[in-house]
Length: 309
Length: 303
Image 1 (tube, rainbow over the protein chains, first blue to last red):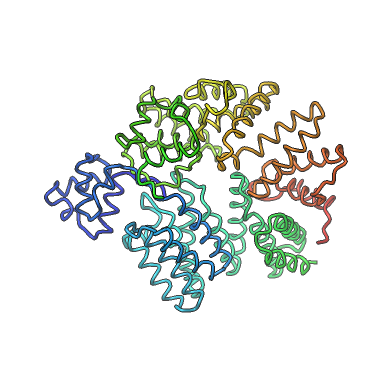
Image 2 (cartoon, rainbow over the protein chains, first blue to last red; image 1 turned 180 degrees about the vertical axis):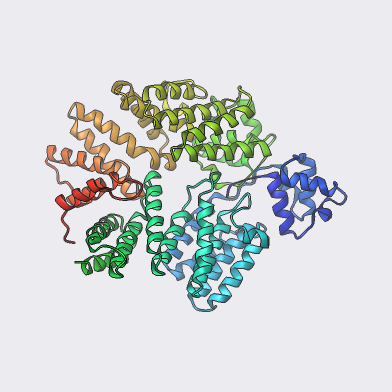
């Protein structure tokens, strides 16, 4: 969700419709005019814009009122699905998926919604072991190709406008590659996501950010990149504190403690730093108990802490 | 119910909240303009649309907009400026502000208001609170012509920007020692929040901080009963919404209140307060030496 200039909509819809600039412009304007529309050098009139959209198969009248709003009630189940996926409550995800289609009649004419539903489907099937990791990767790439060209996927995140669902699909790619054992590929993708979140022109205030960074720091730690993981954790902690959002804070503190302690175990760090590690795990525990979203984590942290004594 | 256009979205939410057209567009646009927007005869520019939606407690970020290239530039430039200020890169922020200024016509109120707010935030970053207060007052006057609690509260609505200006103003006044005026503004903000109890986004962002400052005011006259109401409300909201800012100060203050009222302090977990203090002292995400000493000397390390 966000805002798009007419230039972006024309380009985006044209690609989704599989048309070239020549095909689109034919009968309406010259192809180089299309190019100038898409680059933002020229602003099309409402009339031209409507005709172009009509040609691409969208109903012209939808765009005569430049702002199209979907039912706002859909927001709640979307958030619930995100939560359910995080907590691996697959039954609930399936239920909500159905609700989205039937009760809320998620309009599938928007490519974004197709991608959204596809993403959930892939996650579900993978976790139910109905498809392999490689298959999941393939399907995720297919979903991305609905809106991104091969070059744009390769050069992610250089595309001017990137949607939340595209970011989440790229994130899923990283996790699937990771689960298939392709550590290098997964790390490459994570660092692209890091690059995306460092862009100056995006709005930083949505949930996927810290979910993604948490997964990134977990992955780094598990694969021996302890220092990088520590760096990511401290950066995210700083960000969360600045933004006054402490939902996932305890996870990052825990990871800090875990990384330091693991480094000590491997002889990569002075033994005295165990105090610091304990302190971070202690902090994680105190926060986790106060905001108990996931009771399991409380037990995990406690166990790890007692092992450190 | 699907609101297919911006006009219907505005109209539906305005009527649902029992808000008059006057209240919604006061300071932002003329009533005939609002009527045209609601009937989808004309479309407001993005910046104005945002302000109208925010006054109705809606989050513009959740909707898709198609804007002109120019509006898009302004939106992205605002993101840039906000990010630079947020990261303390004031020189870069000022440069981006100049770029923005060069593109606007000075009569566009919302842009002027935004730029004044950005200027004020830079002053705040440099701890020039008095200067910031003056800029903020000017910013507020761009679109809010009456005092918030004049007449009835139902007549005033605030966009996110206007709300932010009020809050920063109240904080600046407090920080440079003008407590009287500061508490005045905080009280006005509380009345406003009470009148728009359906605006959850603003409540999450501002209620705890407003209640905290007002409880400090109540402390001056030892009104522990009122402090109890304010602080317990703030704590409950903060824990529910995972907000940490000021939480340890609030909990400590609440402890004092409970003692005075001979009430049970339900957060008898001083360790939690220590944890919050340590976090409040952190530097770039790491706990400082000071924080570590606090932990070593006062925390119960047994879990």
